[in-house]
Image 1: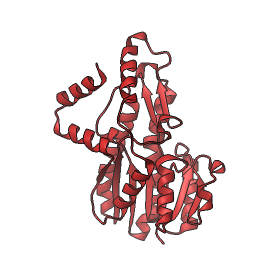
Image 2 (image 1 turned 45 degrees about the vertical axis):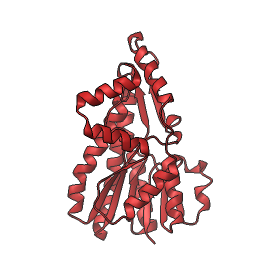
Image 3 (image 1 turned 180 degrees about the horizontal axis):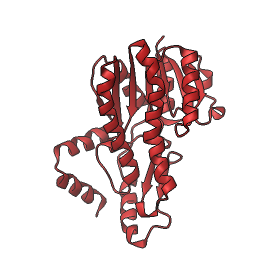
Amino acid sequence: MRSIVITGSSSGIGKATAKYFAEQGWKVAATMRSPEKETELTEDENISVYQLDVSDTQSIITVAEQIISDFSKVDVLLNNAGYGSYGILEATSEDKIRRQFDVNVIGMLLVTQAFLPNMRENGDGMIVNVSSMGGRFGLPLGTLYHGSKFAVEGMSEALSYELSTIGIKLKIIQPGGVNTNFATTSFDMNIEGSPEAYMPLVQKFMTAMQSSPIASESELIATAIYDAITDGTDQLRYIVGADGEQLVGARSQMSDAEFTALVRQQIGL
């Protein structure tokens, strides 16, 4: 039975992916910050739930040791935990700036680092990092979030070279909009206390987002992750969702000036 470790499994993409892999007969280590609140995943005999806060180094070390002890061999690590911090940079505290990168970037690196020795010793394995279409282009108010996802893209591409020399693959999943709790518990909007000069931008951006296309369901992303892991190829990036394909496609075909003009037009700037 193959095994997968999934971070951020309490809801959304992580939870849907844990359930889907368990249905396919995989042994799943579903990690989350508050496992005592989980009731659904604990009922599945193929899923083991563990406590993990990716912004806590000791938590990462402890859970990695426990999972490796329980599973012996980890075939896949899915770095899914993350959240979005949006808003006006001038109104954002240093704590919030650091937390965005601690969770989305540093946490991902440290969790990967914790499981790599097991994969290296076994001579195979796969790291799958959940990025975003927002790792391919930036939007207004997304300085922190897009910055963190650009970092995920760069570090993943670079890491793929060194891992390929020891038999480990790395893949990047780039979802478009997803119908998850990203816009609630996994979303942080920093506009309180913003200078009045920024408010026209904030209002236009929020209006544009409310009229954006319907997002994909988490189950679609879970299926795409499974397909990417099992397709037997060395493909690095996987765009998931019609909106992601459209926007990333446009960004790749347009110049900076053209894409910037498109975004400004869509938002009404």
